[in-house]
Length: 287
Length: 262
Image (cartoon, rainbow over all chains, first blue to last red):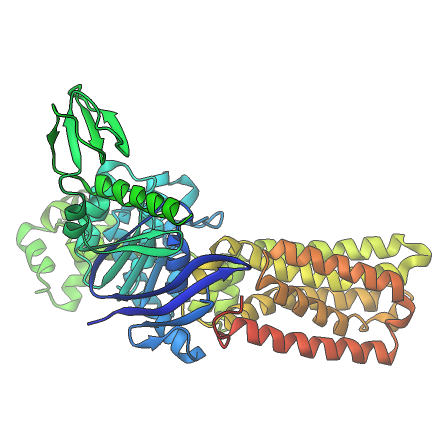
């Protein structure tokens, strides 16, 4: 069952192409979006969240055309929860008041049911006891969780989170992973934390310069890096990245392995770095 | 005290087995007897439902006095949340009242340039008050865009909330200050156009940027053509511009645009 689909969607700002024509289909599950800064991740998420109109192409969310009539776009918005990369909270608001306001914007008119929903999402992000605290009194991690909580209002079919784990400590990240892993709809997460992708995602999409460079399972991404990561006393010749590990050995990603090194299991980060390196090589070959 | 609530009586009370008279008697006694009050907590432990109700009461947001007034006037609770998000109306109403007082003082001190000062400031008070009502939640614009509630409804609510204070306040100024009776209501149509212009700009720009651009533009217009602003032609032009801007605002705040426009 497809939750959202993008067909030949592109976004340009003047002459700069932020997102080349892209076709994607999103089904229930957690999808990780990886890519360097400027790769087009936020543009893709904002377009899907209906806050940035595409230059070309069509988007359908929960069966409603975002790029269609006004009624269809509004209907699509009823199925979307979105957390932007940065949420600047209005001064003076309490955590409860903030969520109450967003809930009204999400058309929760009945006060009692709206308040119950606000309490539900506060509890989900473990802020149930901080509801009456002013947002300015919350820690950075708590504010980030509050920003995520507003996206959870109404349990939307499509949850779009732009770098949700930024600013969270390991325990809070684990809590968020637990929360997202219990979500039944489709979750699209943009992140720089490759370990989040490894821990959470059923599928990973890698963007590079506004184009989808990889779209497949985490296992497939790891498979592409199998046999290309080595560890030993000396670095591999021509390695993309090397670093000395805690054991004193050198971990080499890519390159020709030294004779005294052994092949080791790649991580998602290794696979991502190799993919990026391959992109640079192909860019150089085309130049 | 001649009697105290016994254990069997407590149990009967907590299980709802007492008749109305006996129940009322126990309750009346407990309010007067500290030892029975102390015993009550041990005999009748608070239920989870009771704590839940207490928690709900404590965590229910309290409306600021102006919002309670609006609720009493029949404004729906959800609309009050939208209005309350903008500093519980404090900033926009503060700007409205402060702007009206500033206009009175500046106009009184302007001497020969009284009419110029009046025509310059009165429409700007409306613009600043309206934009102040949007400024508190400006940081959530992108988030708000992704939600389903009509943006036009939010815009109209906030605009009405600010204008319901500024329009009467400034209308009184025109009537009260001597020699301005001829201009008393000539600011209405230009002010309408300016507020709409600021609202249209606000669909692209932060509230205070929109207010600044509008204010500068109006200052230039008044400086170059103040003697003509009171003419029927100028008033008609202001009405026509306001109508066009109203249509643009509706187009900008309802998602009828096709992709590609931004």
